[in-house]
Image 1 (cartoon, rainbow, N blue to C red):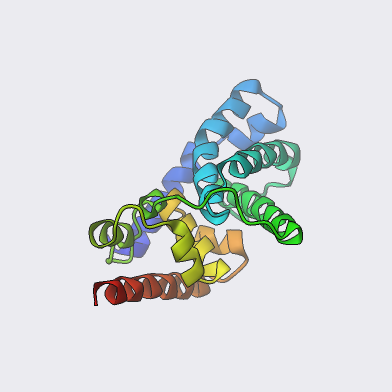
Image 2: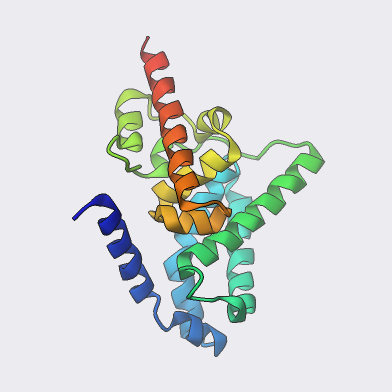
Length: 202
């Protein structure tokens, strides 16, 4: 089975795990809300922490706001257009963007910036970025350094790929780009990170 076939199989498996959840959320089932939180809150929190430069408190707010928005807007979810994961992370991404704009208006930096690269999990594409980073860089290197190296879209795509294992197709739905563009963005992000690793060793 090729990489694309494996990714499609994983996507179908994830969609199967979420089957029925949107309908139960529409019915305002407390059990469905708890399932939604268990399924997505940890990944959204990790994504938000990474995207917000380690600001854990604000990331927690993003999780709460995202969960409320998902439950409130679940009637708009169309399973024929995207997976539930892509739709939920799209909402989380917009919440993060709103918070980023607020922070820029206040001209104040995030509260924390000491999240290790290991928090990004393992990246694919044959190079295993996180494993390479963990073995070749000091564990105390921060995501803030990587954020300065990558564009916003590169960082978001890499974080979604590494943290929640979203497929390129799902990431494309989250960030509003084509699947081919996402593959290109991920390739650029991983190349930049590897070049940094090489320069650190020289």
